[in-house]
Image 1: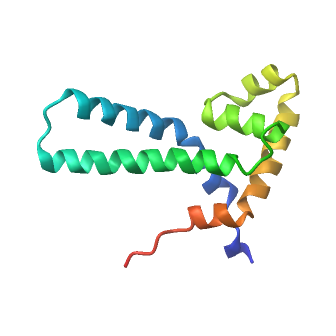
Image 2: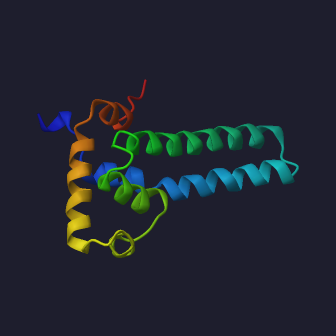
Image 3: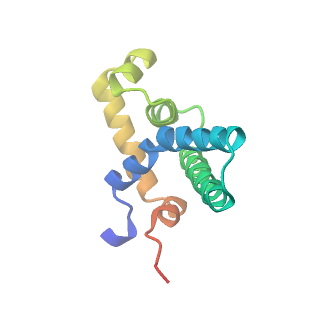
Length: 127
């Protein structure tokens, strides 16, 4: 049964990389617009940009599983999309750090069991 659940560590790492992927996609976009890039490199950059953008879309899709106006959703969006610390999130929302951490952990646990999340994060087979 444990194999049917995405680990919280894997999901958190995937969500946390949103900002990095968003920045990389933007940087590649600027490089493609500004520079003269040879075609072989250009196509590799375009493909990388698409992968970064897909990752960002997937993170937003995963977080969209949560009720949009819920405390869980607000906490996870602030942590993973807006890249804020738990202390900042707790202060902004007017809850204790511990309460926000518990809400986040419960949301992550539930998301780890969601079929769509499991499909997105299952290891790709090398064929």
